[in-house]
Length: 206
Image (cartoon, rainbow, N blue to C red; front, side, top):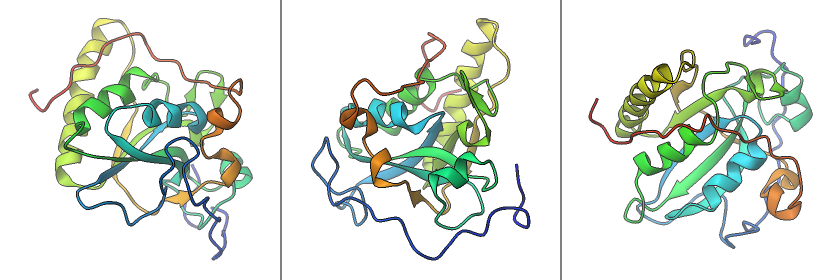
């Protein structure tokens, strides 16, 4: 991982964001409807990860982008260089009256292998690390609780320690338009998603 001094400098200009989500037909940018909650996850390549969430009940919109690094408004090529510190991620905006953060955490844990460190399958690099980036104390508590509960399941199945980072959400930079809803635009495109096959318990009780 680069540090702030060694990371690429980036730029002031933001990446243009499409007006509407290709699948859901709604905006991918704030302001969202009153009561909407958001969080961000990294699960490896963001193409397949985004589809997991746009198909989920209660999710209002999704978008792919970059978080967790130092470079301002990075390009995809810069993120892939490993010189920005950013992670490929999915922003999820959901209606808490129609789904719960815990339910969405189960999708997160069950649709990738959170024990692989800076990789996911054949995708290698700091941008493919597992991460949960939260926007409230309650989300952080639930994320950490679900991690502990899934670690027990992982341990029983013979996997190693979970390497997922759980952090407060910092700056979220939208990815280029051609990455947004990629697997809708390219149905036979690359999808590196692959879980452990294990079921994650959900809820706050530990």
